Image (cartoon, rainbow, N blue to C red; front, side, top):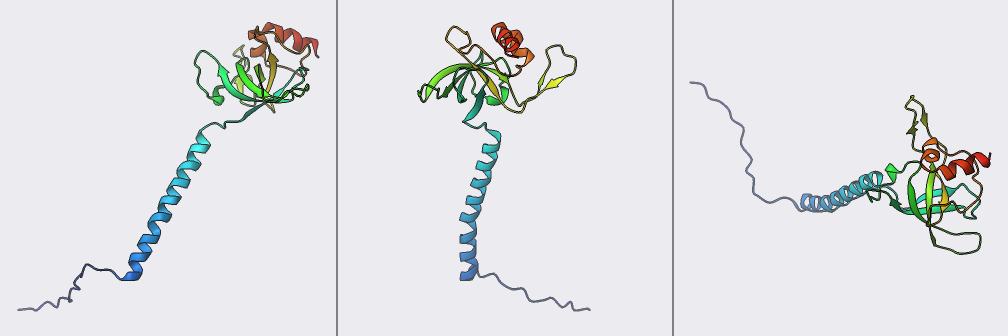
Length: 168
């Protein structure tokens, strides 16, 4: 008969050394902090920023405004869906010194690429986001628009199209 030599088994006493227990306690809060930081970083990259800036393209007296809400059929605060021709509510300061004045504006140019109305394959995008200020009736506040406006905006708002062609 053969005898198999078996190694002695080490028994687990159920207690750990003090150093390994403290290491485990130190790792768990650090892990939680890292997971929370990663989740917040992911959310901030997905969610839109709350201070969406538009530069004013007419001679109304304002330089730049902050968008606070969108005036659309679906009243969702999604700045990713902002296109030329959309009406927005914004806050800004004017030349007369009035600060934090609530105004209405129409987006005329966006950095986000947009397809042409003719559906001929052309995609337009601009270097900055621009708008034109309007009053409650939908008429432009200024009497001149500097630079070009998007074709979609000119078709949706004919008054802006006339002012833009006059300002060239």
